[in-house]
Amino acid sequence: MIETSYKKRLEQVKTFLNNNDAKLISHYYVDSEIQRLTEDTGGCVADSLQMAKFGTQQKEKNLIIAGVRFMGETAKILNPEKNIYVLDKDATCSLDDSCEVNSFKQFCEKYPNREIVVYANTSAEVKAISDWVVTSSIAIPLVENLASRGKKIIWAPDKYLGSYIQDQTGIDMIMWDGACIVHEEYKTIELKKLIEELGDCEVLVHPESPRSIIQLADVVGSTTKLINASKISKSKNIIVATEKGIFYQMKKLSPNKNFIEAPTEGEGATCKSCGRCPWMHLNTFDKLMSVINQKNEINLNEKTIVHAKKSINRMVEFEDKYYQKNKRAS
Ligand code: CIZ
Image (tube, rainbow, N blue to C red):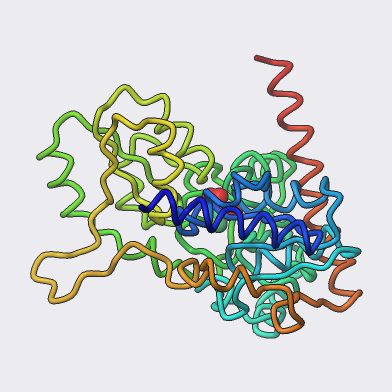
């Protein structure tokens, strides 16, 4: 029954995308049905950088981004000639929201001799006043490279990812005070108890989590790194501390493993947070089927695109060189 209704929806989406010269691109954190529809229509499910890169290689005029607003903006910055649509413009991100461009500009002006490095989870305007954009997949090598050249940095907006980068690279860092509302919820004592209870288990943690959670991890890394780690892990039980949309990819790769959410409910808590991003949840089938309209289109001014593109492209070039070098070395 479920498969029949999925097949029906898949046909509807295929027809819709064909009729509108459109491609669907989704993040690992959206609901499994949207991820599946994306894969089955020749789109791409990935992290924010790979989503944007995939967009640059498509012939379709319209790109539909299932994720949150900054992902749509990044797609627009890298594909200004295309029409970019998001399923819901209210799908934001607590990190992006914490870093309003004028306040951030004033903050940066206090430290004129520092490189400004911002996480991908920021607005196009914040990216436009920054020197570098990084995703969690490339943050450590890129910042290590800056440190080796004697640079000091301003980091925004995620204080937890920032302190993880600082711990790993030793770089001198001034930090913005932002956090992801999902990752901030993981509970240390409860995670320790769960690890003890399970015995044979592996703990995968995204570095947007607090340091005390990272300290309990077997693997720390970006969404892509955690998915790969879940695949090669020898453990039957995998505890995952990141948005649960990612379980879809992990289960697909390892159907016989148990994937367990890291606890978000503290001792004596009267309510439980769900380890789910409320904005990623806004990406639904119904919204997909009516996405192509002005209300959902991402528009950015040209100056913002030009400046933001410069700092994104610096990361992309760094990433390409970094992986080429490491492939040669391996
Ligand atoms: O850059 C991304 O897609 C995010 C938000 C996380 C990650 O680790 O990939």
